[in-house]
Structure formats: structure tokens, C-alpha cells
Length: 147
Image 1: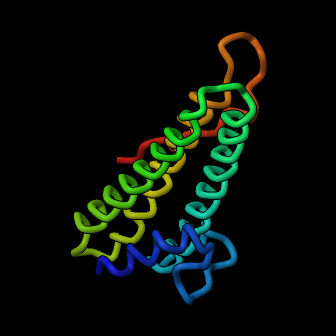
Image 2 (image 1 turned 90 degrees about the horizontal axis):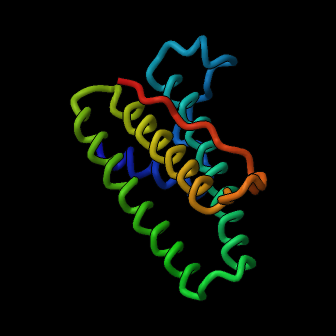
């Protein structure tokens, strides 16, 4: 049901777990779809935290780098548009798999992949320099695409 995905996406903002059932002690031991989703939810929250960290660093650089005044507003507009895209894309993935219990996992994979990709874009575009100066934050890991 779309409501479940919207709840999942909403948990990114609140940090609340998306399921009432506890994850197994080790995610490698997860056997049910709910347990797997709980494990993947932690990955989703971690990706979102990392995105927020890199976004804040980019905003600080924009504010203090002597860039044109409209740069911050443009960056924030881009982030808002990207968040709308991520939501729409992952809802579409959820809908694609709506006949199966795997839909939640597929939606979480979508969220993680797009979030990690955006984090890397922010690092590349806003936190690195053209010369040999080290980047403001280390290069984030990109999610490897899964078929």
C-alpha cells in the first residue's frame, strides 16, 4: 500500500523506526521480510544522516566562500527539487512492486541509492576544490547498483 511507503519516507525526516517489530540481533540472520526491512531501514537512516552532514557542509562553504548571493538560494531550490524527485521515484518503485511483499525493500533500496548518489554529487560539486587542496569532507561511498 502506498501509505506504507509514504510512512517510510516520512521516517527519514523524523528518525522514527518504520516498523513496530524489532530487527534480529544480526541483519545477516534476518529471515522475514519485516526483519529485512527493519535492517534496511537502519541503512536508510544512516544514508539520510550522511546526506544531511554533507548538505550542511556545503551550505557553510557557500555562505563563507564569497560566492554570489543567489548561490545559496539556488542550492536550496535544487535540494528541494531533488527531494521531490526522490519521493516520486521511490513511490513509483513501490508501485512497480505493489503485488509483492518485497515492495518495501525495493523502495528502501531506491531511497538509499538516490540518497547516497546525491551525497556524492554534493561532495563533488560543493566540497572539493579545483587545485590539490583536500576536500572539506572525505569522499562518500556511492551505493552500488543492484539489479
